[in-house]
Length: 344
Image (cartoon, helix red, strand yellow):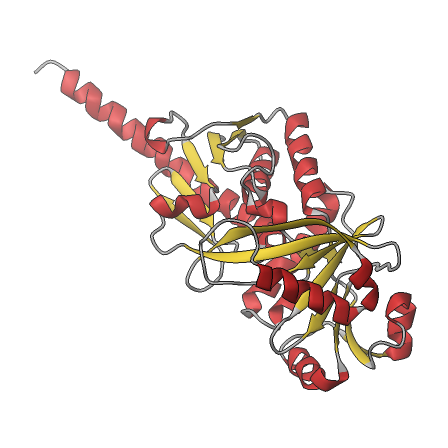
């Protein structure tokens, strides 16, 4: 396969995964982003970082699990901070039906009782009678993971330029991979925004080793440990592309749900309250679309870190088919130009 010069637009998780995958396959890659620094204006910065394909399968299409499961190994190879200790799903006794319905829609889990739950997470001892344990899932800190990808690209000689408002019309690159997220609505008319809000808290009184999801008919919650007593609490899903800080209602609901999971969160220190808008296609699944020499890789929705490696592989495979056609097109243009210049 011929190698090409590729510019990746967007330094979120989609863009950095695509850039690394393409660089590892021998392409000359450059990354540009309109933000001022890594994470600036990037919804990946607000992500939960759960690599939970089977938990996600309970509320999404099966393809999310199929495409997402290999990502756990990909992240473990590229980010040593990937934690492979599984996931837990719990529900209050009054919501036991929610736990049963969740279990019926997925696989690769163990039904555990309160004694086994206490072994896995001692701070949840005596709080829940039943739980689901997904031993093969993992999680990571998105901000540290993005920094690790950027460092890996730096070691490979791939530049990342910030503060660049890129225009495909004026670029001389052979191929453009557009990973701008919601900003790509100028080219992807069916892309919509789904607003998500999150909290980061610190508690000296509680410790988790893995993500914990608590099911609730109205306010489903997940809490992801970041280490050193820091937890990310999320996340709302609101059909809106309105940016700005979280609403009071969402913050209160998240805090109440965290308190219901464990009262120690009532005394936690709030470190951050934030919100952003995630890009989604109508089917809530990511896609790679081609327009000439531009590949649009977008629509990661709420599965950014889980599905970004799969999206990057698809981009690389599409590129393998696209480069020869671009080369043929260029040769045909040169040949046509020579024929026009040839004397009669």
